[in-house]
Amino acid sequence: MTWDDVAERITGTPPAHLATASADGHPHVALVAPVVDGAALAFFTGTSSAKAADLRANPSVALVFEGHGAETYVWGTAEVIADVDAKRELWARPLPYDPASFFGAPERDEVVLVRVTPTRATVMGQGPDGPGRYTWTA
Image (cartoon, rainbow, N blue to C red; front, top):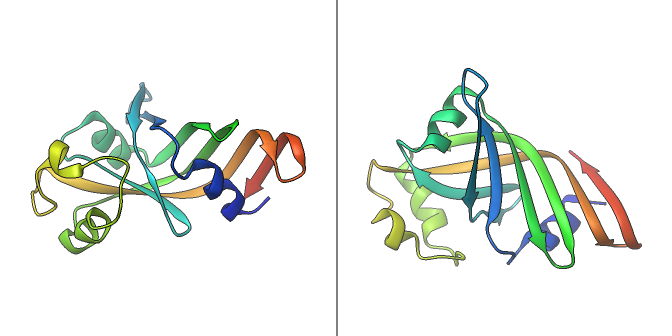
């Protein structure tokens, strides 16, 4: 299984559940709407959100997607990005929601881009060779 196989299964799916942990290890789960951004996943969040605080303290994440006849689990490392040009670039792409309705504009300091670099993924369900469990590792 390749990253492209994984990306195909999560493109256009409903929002994903993102699991983070705070600096002191407390878990947090939130809905996010990431998009595939090359070899990464990307989404927006509020600068002062629990997600952003957790990711600054502990960049390890897990996401679960449901759709395309399979559950897909992705683990990786997140980076919180405040750069306006990077935010504008993603903002201009077709997204599964209107970011302006949540965050106003990419120039606002109150919004950050989160880019997750996947390290591994598991697809449960229909895979390239039929039903099963498929694993991808970076």
